[in-house]
Image: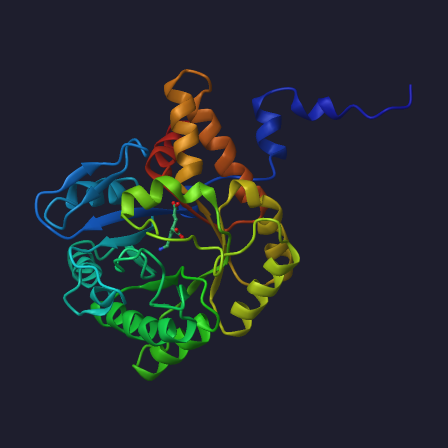
Length: 324
Ligand code: PBG
């Protein structure tokens, strides 16, 4: 009989281990943390079971766990008390994000701290920059982004991750950091970020839902693949150190395209809605939540992501420890 028996290499665990092409590791994970201005806050987010909003006097509980699990990095989101039309509390030296960075770098020097750089949590209208003619004003936003990143840099952040999808964002940030004396501070660009319904639970968590309209004039159309290459190329040329694709699961093709095309590390963001779907179905007993979690994280790695930003980081780290 003239046929190939591929099943030979699936016979048992040992041979499957030997021929396995992709391995997940705790080294791949970045864990997002929501920091709210105030005291004594440890607030559950209903649509994201297991994820909380913390204040700076409670967040050590969470950070201790992250360190104990050997997760290398966290990504911070700030929820300020004060919002205005420009999001000016995002660039104050005593803003919530700046305080958080100083606190964490002082008490957890072993953690790599990345900040999300955006305005939607800081503006009273929930858009990612100041509004002009019912739309986000690109260049006015750039001027404010420069102030925001420099304030994060001064607070001691290890990496900045701009998520606003403004044109010229990476060039502006690189210039601002270089001019302020931070030429070695890396930028992870949310280079390919789609206008996605999968961000729903995050907007509840971060209190950043737009009060009018949506984000389709700055985030990408989910139908576009060639345009993703253009976005990635522009940010690569503007000297982004890491390119991110977001969301992850519905965009695995894009992760692979960007991976094949650009010689920099590729990150993907396993977003809130992707997390919520797994949690909800598992809670109903309809899927095995742990296995679906590990399979989907593995698929992101297989697609080409070197870095996975995920709310599952702690659970997946525990799962990987148990496999050994
Ligand atoms: C914007 C930002 C968003 C997310 C990360 N950064 C929301 C948005 O663009 O509306 C979404 C993350 C998630 O859904 O987990 N600052």
